[in-house]
Image (tube, rainbow, N blue to C red; front, side):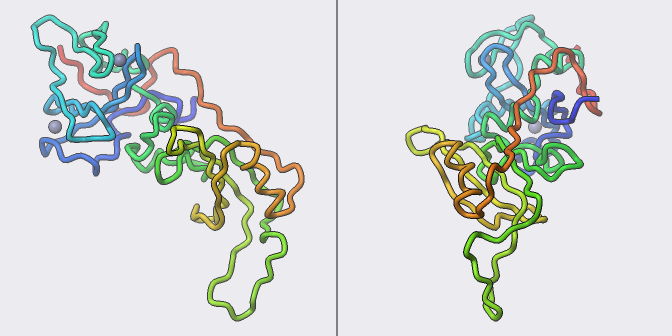
Length: 238
Ligand SMILES: [Zn+2]
Ligand SMILES: [Zn+2]
């Protein structure tokens, strides 16, 4: 069985609260096989939300002429399949959770997909949608080097044993790396921003005195070869 984040997404996987469509929303992600653009369709009313960074931008999912296939709203290349929502085409026209996160759209994933899988608490992305690219688990939870807990201070720093690095983009589109130390509830305890992955990893040595921490990279999986939906079949438009 493949991990859930590597399977084509279903209509259970969109975070519906972002959308107020026709009142009877059935939402599914779509991904263009040519240009990889990702958008959302409400297949109840055939509305496309063509720019997930601006939900006011909508288009009709229905092609203009009869017998024509719809075109990608981004590259305008026509779909090869008229019934692209069919389960048998899932691997071709629907993204995986990783692909949605890679596109910076992780906030549109339903909450059950916010972690790498259901067992581990590694987040797929941080709050602004930047994908998590590496994580490190320490042997034991530590306080920063030289940190002196003050017995009566109101706000104590907690020891941390779990760190993530997320890759975002800065003002000029340059990559930036967000390092975060998380507590057991996944809340950020410490964090900083770096311009290289190496300097973000160095945080553990500089701030916590941890030599040779083993960072594990989270590689986006290859696109699924065949259609393998998880639970729900979308209707075809025959
Ligand atoms: Zn709708
Ligand atoms: Zn396209």
